[in-house]
Length: 198
Image 1 (tube, rainbow, N blue to C red):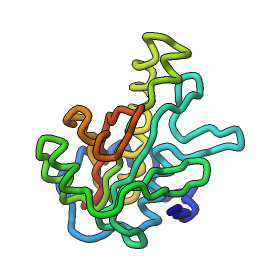
Image 2 (image 1 turned 90 degrees about the vertical axis):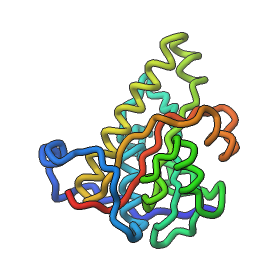
Image 3 (image 1 turned 60 degrees about the horizontal axis):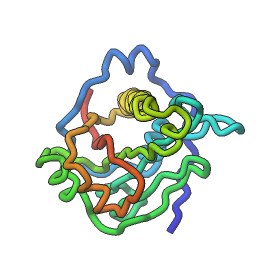
């Protein structure tokens, strides 16, 4: 099942400077859902397409773009509970697993309970094949640099939307990959999303 996301906003009301000033790692979320347009905006800021040439919102070494972004939706208005793969070229979501996954994700991160309380969670993985083929042993390092660019985009966009998030890298090795049926990807980050008061 494919879901086309609402067109992202390209002009906001919060300056980059204000987002930098207010950015914090948030681990407490207010109850209630996020709108699908809000989640779509976050996904676009993470790894959306910004040009006919296929450039993304986040830079990538050699323009290889080896990261994959998934959305675990547990309380998102307009989306059934499930895990979706974000397709940047079409700004859409592809359902890959039905049902709530927040408890499983919290357990896979050594019981970080705030992940279970978030309205949604981004799951960012990497396929190292392209970077290793082009850069050899340096490929993994360059991919992790890409991850940092993506994570900062999400943090700054979240501030502008009054959304809280935090980068979570403490994940049990292989657990989420097995849960999602990922063959050639390594999960690097989880970023829970929920309303907060900055």
